[in-house]
Length: 319
Image 1 (cartoon, one colour):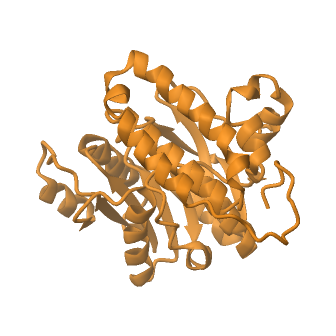
Image 2: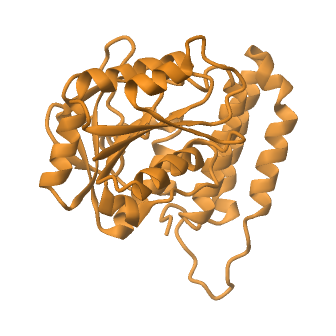
């Protein structure tokens, strides 16, 4: 049986459509849906119990909003405990085209070394999204690819996101987007629970490193197709999302890349300049400036001086 974990936070209508698309695209009894609600303050306009019964959905309610990774861990743990052979993680604003779920599941069954498979993604305007991460994200990539410098370092940007690849073909990647990915049971047991420190963002980068360490491949398979309405649960909290993004980035650089504080500070200053620029246009950014300073200051304090005898590392090595 395949377990499908949907994480919901104030996106009940999207969640309903996601569940319906799963039902429409899969055979009866082929999967078990686990709906994890991250303590949404609102309730759906429809009869939730009726929907749960109709589609055989198991509802798991968290007492508070614990974020993306921790929220998904709740569903993953339940699916593994229930004996699911594979686990599909889907954002609530994802819509599956017919046969896509079976396609990903069949690929994992036929390729044991492929621990994760991700689909072709179209946005709400019908545009193909070329956003696979095709190599490990070290500090070099953080500076040259994941900032506006990518306009100068175009070749590196193209290689990083696989823009030079044929997105109509199956190919291995370092990480697929977290909005939709499927794990084999063996892989899920090896790389989960996900790191729960980040609330939002950089989850794919952290998972990519875990996959590399566990010896599993991550595969992009365009024969499976989804539609993704970006930011369905965060579009109304833009400043909060930005703050969590920078918090996760500082954490990733410290804990996964083992970067020194001096190597990360220019990146932090750049992100802060972008935040201040948004304060001019958006009231929520301006009102949460102190929160941004508080959260990022706490993260910067956690950088520790490395052993004096450790060999000095290159700014861009990230190891």
